[in-house]
Amino acid sequence: MTRRKRRNHAAGFKAQVAIAALKGDRTLAELAQQYDIHPNQITDWKTQLMERSAEVFGDSKAKAVEPDIKTMQAKIGQLTLENDFLEGALIKAGMLSAKR
Image (cartoon, rainbow, N blue to C red):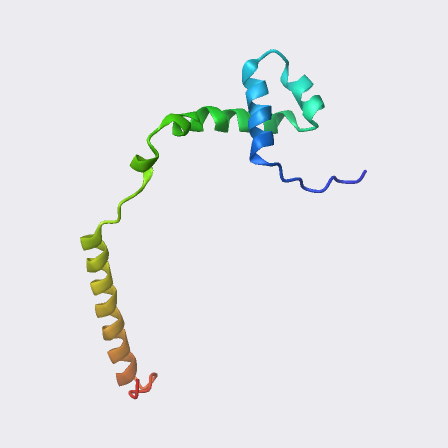
């Protein structure tokens, strides 16, 4: 018995199959046979569609995450301080050239 190569399905195809599963006019077994896909895959796509359907009608601007500039600058300062400390320690230990 030979294994089938892994297939990558387009987003449109996944949506079509998931919508057909949501309609409920055919069983999963019938849909699996029609689209040549395992029933578990159809169930996964159906679940993903139901969970993410709110994103379609949501405000796309609200999803954009605004970076917190002050937090980022504080983190940069902390990392710079740590790097300087470690560089000094390595120079004293003779593991790093002081010419840098």
